[in-house]
Length: 551
Image 1 (tube, rainbow, N blue to C red):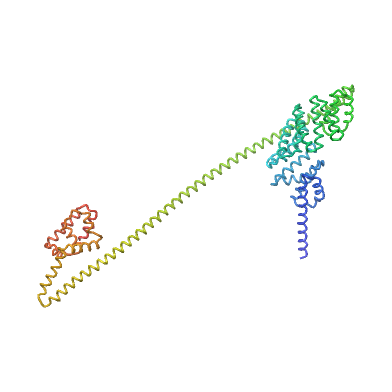
Image 2 (cartoon, one colour):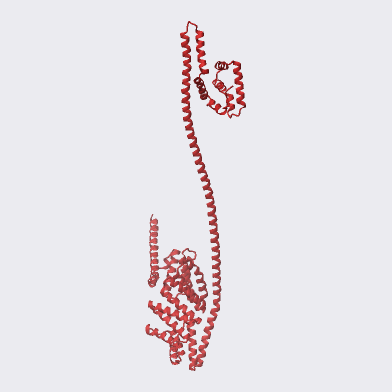
């Protein structure tokens, strides 16, 4: 129990400490752009040995490297930035991945490993393009331009300076836009495009003055003065350099004194040229500035008759120029690698585009196939629905027909029942009459009276149309209107033949029929046989039914 509480307390303390570290890193990140000194102070108070998670260590390493650069602290060790670069190389955080590469390239530049720095920046360009941040792109292109300028590759320096300017302007960074314009003017001046260079310098100077950026104003005046000298305008160069002292209230540095000496030499004022040359005799860290100083000193000493000093300065200048040429030759490797990277990027883009087209084609085919399947399924469903509708309609029609038939049959059954009841009543009335006659004539001449009565009744069926109609209606009721059909299909039959059929269908025997017709039994049988043959030989559709009922 005690050990469990210790572990729990340790875990809570660890989580609280990590939260505090993360809050400090977030504060440093917020102050990095506007107050980099505050960000650096926050990061310096974090003990890196207490950072256990790789992600936190990588974030700390990246922020610390950025804070050092923004505070203009020179760093040539890559031990810190490598932690961030190695971690973010496999990360999905594209911005941190790019920034770790970018600041690693800056350290390579600080170590004067320009070829490796250039390769690193060109590889990082693809990540930056994916980010789509014009400010970060401007920073990257500015560093690439500086590397090319250091190696005296002014064509590429101008190319990337223009890219830097366009991206800075797109991101509305006036301060950075001024530096990019100055870099463009510097590269154009080296090409001999002095008019274009002066336009860039004046534009840069205008922005710097609006921002009250003293270092930028000073830098631009110096570059503008050098452009005036190259354009054989020494007096304008002197005026530009004097503005540094009068407007900015600062002394000229070694390079500015060297430019002033060159301007006075061009103006044929050798005493002033020698004065500023002595002011410029200090250590130069920039190769180009040193070369310019040596060449200016050699020209002034040559014109003042100090030939030994002039020869020495020319020798130094030639040595520096030779070093620069060697650097340019070494730079060809970086150019080749840049071409290779660009070619690889084009191949990658072509492959990506081809893959995208294939994917789109596959998706289109899939959509067409699925649409076809859906269409077929819809057609089948529609057919089933239509068939179902037809079935339902047929069923409804059959139901209605059955209902009508049921009603008709009920009506017919009622009518038949009524008719049968009437016939039954009539038949019983015959019996009643016979019984009454027998009762009344009992004891008298009963046979003659009954005979006469029966004969009278039979004669009424044989000669009375009502009796005949009654028999025909009974036959029609029992045999589905057979007499109606015979009249329709065999209109040529005589009335005597129809009477015979009526008696036969009613079920009367030949003896009874002979009594009705007054013919003999044999003649009645012959008439029945002839009539049956006549019906059988006719073309009546129901002749088989007609003849079968005569059996």
